[in-house]
Length: 385
Image (tube, rainbow, N blue to C red; front, side, top):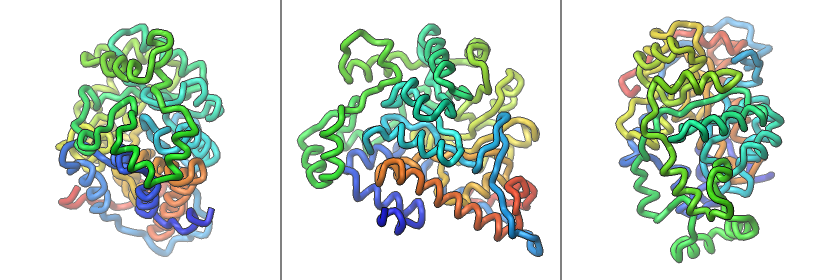
């Protein structure tokens, strides 16, 4: 697509998505909690990481192949779980899955997805991870885990940083709700974005498909949303990890830990990996930037435990900086969702390719022909981190 070829950065992709989407939908994707300082801090902290390059290195052949959990991925970046994605593009979840499959990177399906586990697993050809929002009853959790396993999920990701909804003021001001409902204001905004409106009208209103199996038959979207809000556990503790871990045959990760002490405890309890994340700034506005706590967490858990950085990545050089500070892998959420909003699967693929190209330039400029060389660079956090 001609427009995609003119998009040179994730910032460009964000601007294109803003043009394509009604304000209410764009703000749902782009927004964060309260004053959105945490979201801004995430990227600012990555920007503030300084890396000392090594020169006089043969960089003619470069590779980003990364081993993680017994698999080799073509790039050290995957797609984070995002809820209600189909609002930006019909079947956006499937677009993300297929873009990730083509790029040979992992894609994580959210419990709050608008696509069923089974349909997503088919599109991803079994090469996906499943993110679990712990439900208040054990039976539903176990069935979600079973369904994910049977659909081919290769890892289970338990989110721990959302014990209570964040105050997302853009959504509150816009009247955004789950399920999505068209208000007169949104109808007018949709009329100003005809391409989005035509796609929206031609497809069913997105619903929380992953949990649809657990509510009464013929329940509408509003009933589904109310069910999920009421059933997300507010009593999740360390004691729950053992039975969740035992229910899944594969790597078990915790998403959202930010404390070195919590990371050590997770390691002691047999967790295979930690996604160092603050939910993209969408939960606790005062949470630290993940890259700022990454070195301390790496020092606490040692070199063997898998650490994945999420939140704030907008450049391939951000991926490089995270790897230099101790991450094994990274995830992006908004970057590929902006891409899907612009052009579906090709847009998501373009976002991944932009990051790949920028990371390749980072490798060349820092004297790191192999992606594993980045971890040996000298990197420093500045005050902004």
